[in-house]
Length: 80
Image (tube, rainbow, N blue to C red):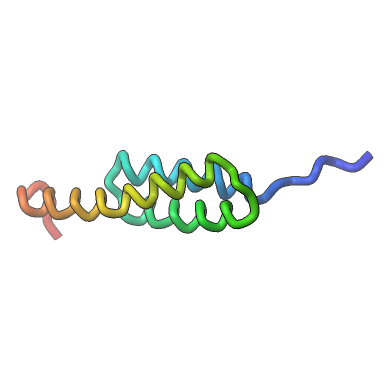
């Protein structure tokens, strides 16, 4: 008996979704960017809803992260 084939793109779709959510919640540019990269990679092979959701959340998260950094720097909440 052969074991079921492992779908590698499903893992990328889950990673894209998790990173997209983290990017929005934390205002993290890196998480959002990785969510976009993983979502686009997973979407090429399959039309997974998780891949599309991760891609969309990452695209929304990138400008949100930039806005978040500008506001926090302007208010003096964080410094370099």
